[in-house]
Figure 1 (cartoon, rainbow, N blue to C red):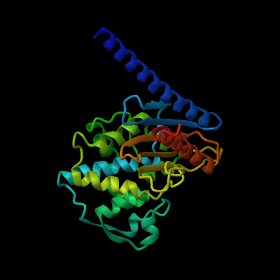
Figure 2 (figure 1 turned 30 degrees about the horizontal axis):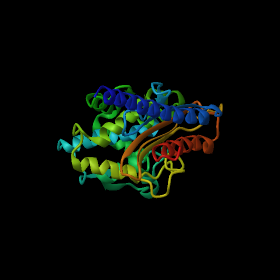
Figure 3 (figure 1 turned 30 degrees about the vertical axis):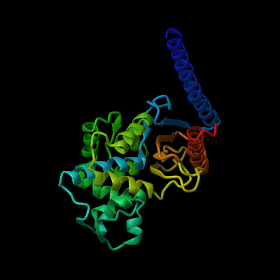
Figure 4 (figure 1 turned 45 degrees about the vertical axis):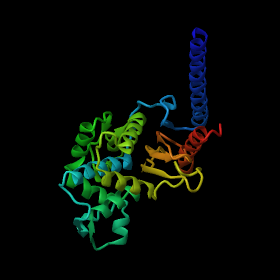
Length: 299
C-alpha cells in the first residue's frame, strides 16, 4: 500500500512538472516572437486545465480602443434580460447621428439615416466595429460610466471606460483613459463564455457569441493563421498612428474552439509600436498560431 501511494505521488509530481514545463515552452516561444518587435505586447492565454495559463505583461494597462464595444454589448444585453430593452425594438438613426469623422458601415450604407432594430445595431457595433452604433448604444446604457459600472458589478476589475468613441478619437492622448489588462480581458471572455453565474440569459448568451463569431474586422489577427474552419469568437480594437509613427493599439481578444470542442481564451494587445500595420497584425496571428499548436499537441 505504501509503495503504491508513493508511486502515485511520484506520478502526479511528474505530470505536474511536465505540464509546467510545456506551458513554459509555450511562453518561451511567445517571448521569442515578441522580442524582435519594436512594440510593447501583452498576452494572456487560458486553457481548460488550470496549468494551461500564462501571461506576459498581463497586468499592464493597454488602451482598449474598440474592444470596449464588447463590454458595451454585454451591458446592453444585461438590460435586455431585465426587460428594459428588447432586441426587436426599433431605433431611429437620424442624419445628425451619422458623425462624419468616425468609421461607420451604417453611415456608408444609409447616408440619410435608417430605422434599425437593437439587435442589428449590436451586430454592426460588435461584428463590424461600427462607431455610430457604438455611440447610440452608449447613450442607451448611461454613457461610458454605465458600462464601467456594469463591469464592476459583474465582478470585473481593472477596466476603465471613461470616454465614448467621438471623445477618444478627437485627441490622441485621451484614448489611454479607456484601458484594461490582458489578464482581465481573458477573464471577461471566460466569465461570459462559460456563464456559470448566469450573468446573461441563454438567449442573450447565444446572441453575443454568434455575433462575435461573425466578426469581420481583424481577419488577419487571431484567426489569421488558424485552420480555415476554426471557430473564433472575438473582438478587435485599433488606433491610428500618430505623427511620430507610433501605433497605440492593435488588439484582439477571443475564444478559440479546439477540434475536440473545448475552448481556450486568448487576449493580445499591441501598443507603443513603431512597426507597420501588417507587422502589428502578424504579431497577433503568430501568437495565436503558437497557442493553437500548443493546445492541439503540435508543439
